[in-house]
Length: 307
Image (cartoon, helix red, strand yellow):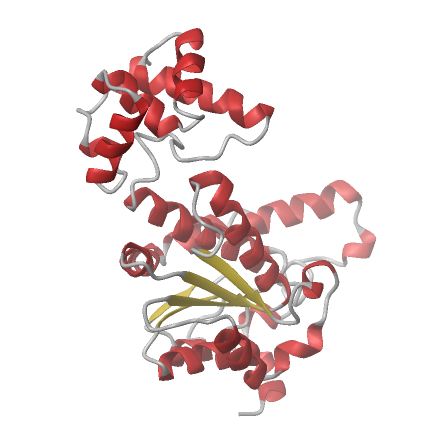
């Protein structure tokens, strides 16, 4: 395929005729135009929620069976992948290898654009193979255009190995859908600044990745009610959040929540189980392990947690 000839047909690459000459309007008007366009993104994502749900279910299946989630992207898409993967360990106490990001150009591309590397399918396939992606894993390819060669190469390689694949793109009928078991195509349309897909397309991609990882972790029991009971409280702010989470879930005072957390080595889920089951930390951990760490399976529903 002639990728250069294909560009004008992509909505993300089109000129937006509804946008005036940005150099002639004041700053507030520029921001208003951007905000108006940004306001369309959530509605565009809403249209593909059934596909996102299917992808979440496949991610959960892979992770529950010991597989891993690999994001693959180039440029902005790759950086968004890195961001989402990096947030999983502190938010959900996942091992770093459970959710990983493969970005065209490697770690250097996180801080400095290396656009040329995205044009090679062979590099996408090579990087996926070198990352150790295997049959029990799932690969999510992220590309605003829907036809980035690097991402196509990684997904094509993964499919050939019998590995589950998902695509996230921002154009209707993307080429990447041909190498994805599940295709999530958010139609974000032309950008305020022609072709600058770090804008609406980037926002849409971030929303979808947030949904994929967060909903998957919810299904895996990493939350209780709408609380992050598996987070790692590694700084003052997060320790305070852990205290408030235990106060809400266990309906205890701040002092009692702090005592429970100290006894539980700052494991919020363990601290909550200790109080509500009236057991020590070791017993709470054993009981949690018996239900795959899903706190709700041990406890009756809490009605609004005292709200």
